[in-house]
Amino acid sequence: MNVSGELTQALVVAFSAAFTGNILLTKFLGMCPFLSVSRQVKTATGLGWAVIFVLTGTCMLNWAVYRYILVPLNLEFLRFILFIVMIAAFVQFVEMVLERYSPVLYQNLGIFLPLITVNCAILGASLFMVIRDYSFINAVSFGLGSGFGWMLAILAMAGIREKLKPERIPKGLRGPGITLIIVGLMALAFIGFTGVLSGG
Amino acid sequence: MEILLSIVIVSSIAAALAAVLVIARKFLVNYGECEIKINDSRSFKVEGGASLLESLTQNRIFVPSACGGRGTCAYCKLKVVEGGGPVVPTEEPYLNAAERKDGVRLSCQVKVRNDLRIQIPEELFAIREYSATCTRIRNLTHDIREFRLELKDPTEMNYVPGQYIQLFCPAYDDNEEVYRAYSIASDPAEGKGIIDLVIRLVPGGICTTWCFEHLKEGDAVRLNGPYGQFRLTDTDAPMIMVAGGSGMAPMKCILHHMKNTGSNRDATYFFGANLVKELFYPELMKELEKDMGKFRFVPVVARPGDDEKWAGETGLVTEALKRTIQDASAYEGYLCGSPGMIDAAIEVMVELGMREDRIFYDKF
Image (tube, rainbow over all chains, first blue to last red):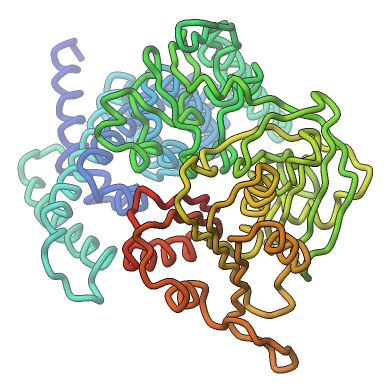
């Protein structure tokens, strides 16, 4: 495949990861931080950026580990444990960088930054990338696209929840109840993207 | 073979990652030596990375802090002129708009990452770390004890009656070491080297449990101080004092001081307890009443027990206060006790006509 063809394909992969195959709204991965940090647009934005960054970074690292260590040694089954270790180390690293260079963001993310480690969207993206046998460029764009899609979903949710604050919601539905209903509606809306890409 | 290889691969990758993290920590979390400049008059160098409060304490400048650096008591506020970085979310609830504009910060939440310029009240320089010996422990009630500490190094503390010290509680069982604030209850006439504390056992309290179960007569202790603005004014206004439980401590010190200086101020001291057996220092109070013509001690027992004889005031201290004093507009109020009691007392005093700026209190 020539260079422009590869770039086009990477773009398609990113687009489909963000919209038609949105990791949160069609795969329902990464739900717990999504539900707990979507109260304010400000913190949701911070977490969104952190997820984009971590997702892309770990996709790149895990791709290399898988391709150059596990495949040659025929140890593909180790990917679950190694991907988790890689993600944990990467998050630790990001935490140190943030603490040094952006203390406010570090304080804002608080407990959620370490929680990214166990955000299943991150591990999910790495595993999908392996199953789909992506090239490096595609893996990077898949990571970027998935992260962007996740951020898009949490931002939309945070916006809706901020608007919802003054509304009178039936008691039994307050909190997670109404949030899950909204996620369902958003997921329905995202299914509408399915027709956009034929190869998605 | 495959098993061995798997183990080797997993461990070596984990080890490599750990190595990367250790190296990253060394470079990223290492802030090097930072200079802290105080009031543009003195400065010292510290290793960066710790909180400003810790760095100051290490250099023997004791900023008051009751919560132990968790950012919940807001006693450690000070002005950071330069280098403090942005206000972090944990500080926000404790800073009003004027303070933010002035650069006031909670020093336990400011991390030393670079050179800092700060401003603190000069009187904080007088605060010292003391080593002392616990020479006497007396039971006052079933859960309140008096601890006498004799200062060893330095041997004297220049405190103002009403001020408090911070007692160092070493790590024990599963608890970390902490400092906790206690008011000085001594009679200043006994010398500046004697610090009496009146401590009530708080169930589950780290430091009070240590004092009651681990601290013995003859043990060495550490403390620092003195802190606090709670003190007698130099007016002649009649006083209403209200305290409960270990809130007795600063009042006792203030009363001794009034007696020692031959003060002739009119003072009424309402002391609240739940049961008669929870009252303490009865002889001392009688003696003070005898020595100071215009001092009156009014113990108030909320609900005397069935087997207890009690002819004095009953109910809440605030109720007794209302029954005794009709017009408080000329009075000054001195309060020490739990936040609930203080808030209730302030409300009643204001209702009786006292000016709010004449009410002084020490909440704990």
